[in-house]
Length: 166
Image (tube, rainbow, N blue to C red; front, top):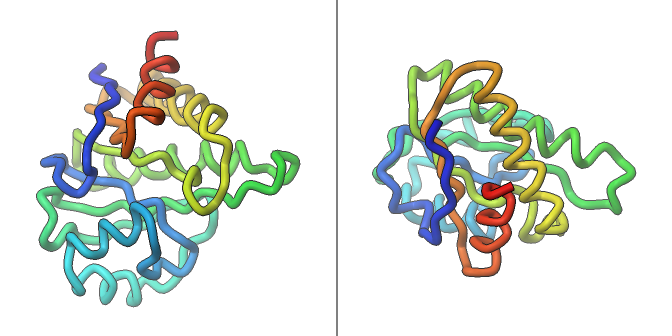
């Protein structure tokens, strides 16, 4: 079961699907969401507008348009409120929903950003642990996929490498 972390610009990865750390309105934002929208072109925002909304902990799919990835899976992670409002379950749900979308599409390879760790404020060490544990459990239950955790910087890469080694 290929599971790896790379320091990479997620918008450049030639996978079946990349995951966008999106907001509930699927609107272009900052961070990885803004980078994905810029790289995919204006067609992505138009496709997201047709979908309109996605609840936290779920995911929706659009074509990749100008990206090397065939699809963009828009996963909605939680805003961090201290950990007592179900954030861990919602974050795990966003990862599981993304993997389910990939399987529904007939895909095999996927790249994830560190969902909810930017402006949503999720503690990076906790988010990384949840991501790796959730993906490992999903792959054990539903079969192998090629999963990449695309890390924006060396600090995030180190956190993922630590979790993947454990």
